[in-house]
Image (cartoon, rainbow, N blue to C red; front, side):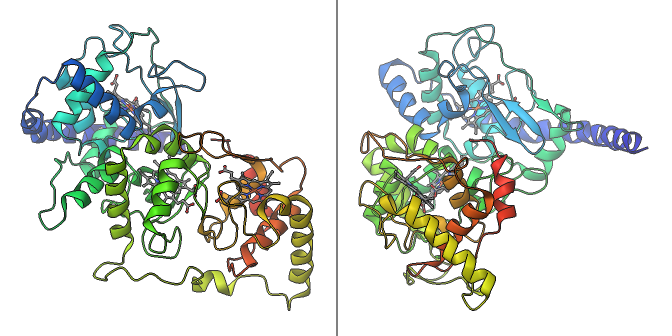
Length: 443
Ligand code: HEC
Ligand code: HEC
Ligand code: HEC
């Protein structure tokens, strides 16, 4: 019965979808000619394209683990199934060998493949639509300069009905409008450059903004924090001062964090470590400065000037639910957590959670471990790991994994402990929350 209902629904959507697709094509025809090709070629265009490809982090998704650069086949897990990235090298049969600069522009700007089929938004074209035609052409020049690699793309493995590509017409009608980058006349050139990088090429909101049930990000593009589905890391809110607390960050620390992956206040880890390693570390000093100017401004609540709040400001919800030593079970867990900390963590992170500057991150007043959703500190303790390898921090120090050594209750206790000591005030963690994360994929 259910299957039949699903089939009817899918057919209905398909019919609706085709209608919308026709309308959509009519509606966007203008868009295709709007960007005039500049025919950028030559070494300068290739060098510029190589830089832009870094800013857009194209290689991270288009290179499989242990695979050849830009040859595709990296699986991208979504709540609807797995989509594989494609081969961007100029191989005529399996890559972009027969593509023109117009074709690439259409993919980035409109989310359409060369033959016109809709691309899945696991490819962040809702951000890349803001890339300028000049930048798209430079990217094309660079991709053409790569050595061709023959490697056919793998078909997506999505559940019914999401596997029906034409249905993307409905999604696009609801959530996607091709957009041309419009600098704001009221803002400085530096702010505008930062906005172009964050909203377009850098696609920060692909992780830092919530997605709705059909996987579309918040149309406002606010970086209000989100649990990344399937991957199960939490990308904190970058606005206001409660989560990542960018308002409190001195600009210099933020520049080092994003450019080198480590700073006196925290290090990046998980998917953010890859973003820094593959993309942000290559930003020119001017582009990194522009990005930080934009981020700090976005972090400020609308209509206020920057008002740094205390680094230990307590979100009310977190404060209410933190461990109370008056409760005997809570006191026992706290005791247990602290013992584990002394045995397994203190050597590196220090008795006062102060860390060792440039070597081990502090845990006191480290916003990255205080988010209401505790997935990140739990997963760091389970998996351990290294910060990103960058020119500014070529040999990052590592943290051992504790998944084998500590049971769920121990990890819950030690994570609760670091979240509630040294002036930290975040809610306690339950063993069940650790259990759920043990099965999550490592990346
Ligand atoms: C977050 C991962 C991700 C990033 C980052 C990314 N891509 Fe992709 N890209 C994909 C996926 C997945 C597909 C396949 C989509 C599909 O099958 O519908 C794709 C498809 C494409 C296609 C269409 C190829 C075809 O044969 O239709 C082009 C062109 C492309 N990407 C170029 C780029 C460029 C250029 C960049 C950097 C500016 C980039 N991508 C960054 C994931 C990504
Ligand atoms: C692939 C997903 C992903 C993308 C894309 C991404 N982030 Fe993140 N980001 C995360 C995750 C997960 C964390 C939490 C881990 C951490 O704190 O290092 C994070 C953390 C951060 C932090 C806080 C670090 C701290 O220690 O408090 C900042 C700042 C940040 N991201 C900025 C950015 C900017 C700017 C961009 C766009 C250029 C971006 N992110 C793109 C996933 C992502
Ligand atoms: C051998 C030294 C070492 C030990 C022991 C160690 N850590 Fe770490 N820890 C690190 C390093 C290095 C990082 C940065 C890793 C990264 O960036 O991926 C880190 C990162 C973290 C983070 C994320 C904070 C941030 O800003 O990156 C947390 C939370 C954490 N450790 C908690 C613990 C706990 C709890 C224990 C004990 C169960 C522990 N660590 C034991 C070295 C250590």
